[in-house]
Length: 350
Image (cartoon, rainbow, N blue to C red):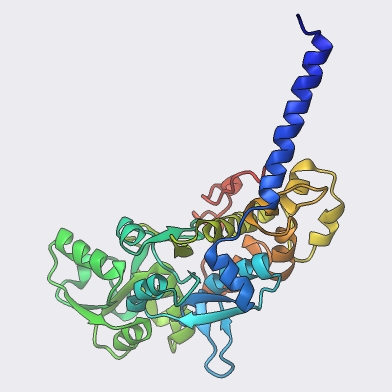
């Protein structure tokens, strides 16, 4: 017996609604991963961070308070999961301690100016979040030497931190240029700067952001030091977490994407409440309004990004308060939004 077109239409609509409702049910019942559940149970996020790089991760020697761009990424994740950006314990990590800290479960995640590489991806057993800062390795030296390129420092000594891609890159670069430059390896960032400041080496090398941070925060007269124009490497920096919890890794990823998307929408910590009555479907989905199930896909409240933005701000706000004081100009750099010629781009919240 032939079915009438009307009946077929009803069946098709019913099946479509069933699929839609089933998808929402799956999102609502998404089980939490072990790391996410542990964070909720203890009421705080444990984040591996830097304690000595101004602008990125810095611990006040008097108050013990952590501040910085990478620090704020951790605070954003805490806000997404716990609704409280202050519910974070920071574990200061030297470069050589990073692998053990992430593999042992000492920390839930790391946001510590760490370069994404294939060896770390595989050997450390981690899941990288989105790139939060596009950097490159540079070289700092004294203005008094009157040099404009690294080759002009032939016959000198350069300081570098142990256990970093920086150490490997400078070795390759010296070999490539055929220079006779001695490499002095120091255990951590502060010791590397102090050796340079004390005159044990004529130059020192790390990511350009780190050079700018130490020049701003540690140099007696920042104008006495120059960062050479050469960029030795690509240094994509971002947060990472153990492979044992993909669900937690997704929370990190979409929180970072949300910071970027918020800036693109023009949503800030100061005006986020004004967007809660928006009739724009894209903004409603992004903020989890009108029963849009965005957060449920991650096991979070649908309006988790409202909380994140209200407490931490968008990507641009985080950059402005932490990195602009260092002289790290964002306009025209890779760290601008894709709409402004940069590489920062969020997938759709759909």
